Image (cartoon, rainbow, N blue to C red; front, side, top):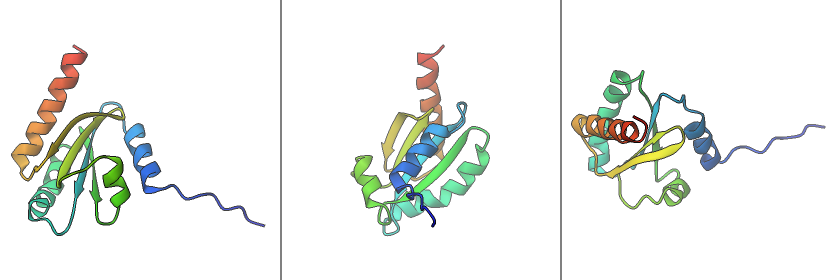
Length: 119
């Protein structure tokens, strides 16, 4: 007789990732869709961003068409939406991001916010 373990839902898996990220790392949670031109421009920048800042952040991409329940849970009303987390807590949210400069600016803004709380 075998006992099957319940499979984690996408929501449970995402919560686990956000909570277990290394304390010094940011998590950039990117909600996008494949029928969105702005999302396409952003997705083209993500490999560069993830590689350039690999020591500072982890990047997760969520396709809202494949995971609509996550879009609802995280109150996503437009795409692309980038949410920045630190130690499981949301620090910054921005919709319409589509360039390297905007991603870099989000990282700087999030860092400045956290540093202002913990000088």
